[in-house]
Image 1 (cartoon, one colour):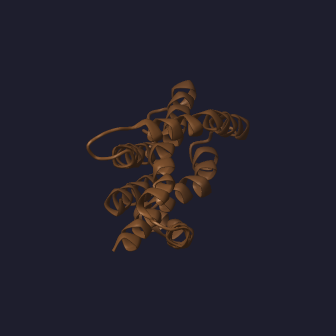
Image 2 (tube, helix red, strand yellow; image 1 turned 90 degrees about the horizontal axis):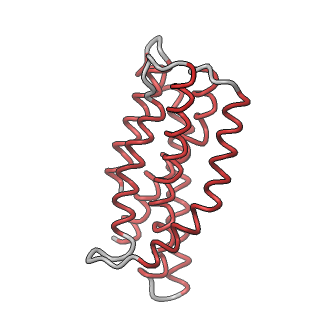
Length: 190
């Protein structure tokens, strides 16, 4: 039961990750018209920020003391906020253009990375806390990674078709609707 629950969480988590990793460049550059130079600088800045953010999150998780444990508060809050931010990243208001658009996508993308870290670090960090032996840890890791691959594969197989079906003539609207569906599935899986 715990392995299945853990695996289902990995499916949702990696659907969110893969949607962003696979389609954010296309969405920002080809659909929103943001320059490749700006997008590249944004993604680089976000990765540099993540290099500092990830260890800080690890320390926060390790120091968390709550009646829900050290992992659950971060998993819950990170998942819900990340789902909302994912939708916001792919449902950019039509009226935004120029500098307001650049500010919006920059804030959304960096916030997405922070909130993804909020639930990703505790997700993988809890393996030793919920297992008793090294063999159990290995088995749970395999379940998590395998199910994560399933989540990634679902995005790879169905996103383009769903964008077309759900967006009609508007890829922009299609991506927003796909992000909404993935966000709901993500929260339900966690």
